[in-house]
Length: 384
Ligand SMILES: Cc1cc2nc3c(=O)[nH]c(=O)nc-3n(C[C@H](O)[C@H](O)[C@H](O)COP(=O)(O)OP(=O)(O)OC[C@H]3O[C@@H](n4cnc5c(N)ncnc54)[C@H](O)[C@@H]3O)c2cc1C
Ligand code: SF4
Ligand code: SF4
Ligand code: SF4
Image (cartoon, rainbow, N blue to C red; front, side):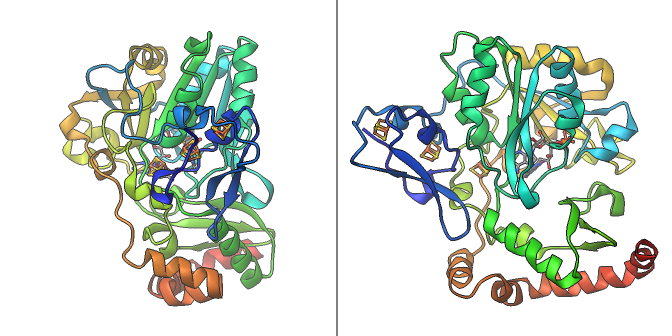
């Protein structure tokens, strides 16, 4: 039986299209830029491989997992690393071990004009592009073939991504003879906004500023610390800040995010990392006091425990109980905004400027203006 999914049941991981032996599946973007598979009946031989490998199902496999994860609050010992990462630089500590073992690292980086795509890195500078949360769905096209080549060449491989992407990678290589060389790290995830909105938003900012963007940061800790949600955008000749209501209101999340089977402790990776929200009420409270960022580590498999053991000396960390670190996205999927359907219909019909005015006016205009006021001296300084 070939794949036949409703929008709620497909996370866009692209695995089915890569696994199809007849090249019968194309990933097609919808109006928001989310990818969905489309089967060409004239090529399909009904082999059933696409449906068999698809991991976006409540029965996804976790047979290698411990009975329950072991949880740690932890952050990198080097403050410079914490400053450059989203939370406590858990990803850097874990990937440093892989790189120093001669391995390769896959993560979410940038394509042309800040399009968010999954990429491969073999050294620190390549890996560093993956640092920082990008609140847009990243494109996984080509990643499975590249990982296969690395595993076939006996390389150690680390894959990092959302739980649905990690589940797909795990499913793809479950039977690979060198599966033990594949290290999986997922993030706790509340959902992903669509790529076309992101693209339109950047075009809007560039037009408004009259300059090309040179750098983006979806959650700039340098401004108000780890707890804040302030985006920063660096332009060719100036630096400015803004805040986007649209990206945090769940109004443009992928439909499958509200039906996500992975928002629990049955993780699809060896190690899960997250922002340790609620750290102040846990035994690890002392690690979060500086508001610079602290990670939550969930060690899900014996391999994850061993991996963590290799990097522990680079961390300040404290074991915590699971009930001390539960956050909503470890318990249930995000709820879509009640105007999600209307938002998409309006976007399709009238475009970004219209939905920004209609749905983003409270968030964007007021906060943007307020922040601009505060930052006017900073902006002036950069313009000089
Ligand atoms: C869309 C999204 C939703 C998230 N939701 C939550 C949440 O609800 N609760 C929570 O505690 N944490 C959430 N996080 C994770 C959190 O923000 C941090 O990314 C995570 O704790 C890692 O921090 P770090 O300092 O170890 O990593 P960093 O050094 O900052 O590295 C970032 C890591 O995240 C990966 N990544 C970045 N953007 C994407 C993307 N678009 N798709 C796939 N992988 C990506 C990179 O490959 C890299 O491994 C979310 C992240 C993203 C991208
Ligand atoms: S979840 Fe992935 S494998 Fe399943 S149908 Fe969607 S794109 Fe294909
Ligand atoms: S059933 Fe087989 S041939 Fe048909 S689309 Fe799926 S993987 Fe391809
Ligand atoms: S919420 Fe679930 S479906 Fe959505 S991106 Fe995250 S892991 Fe994937």
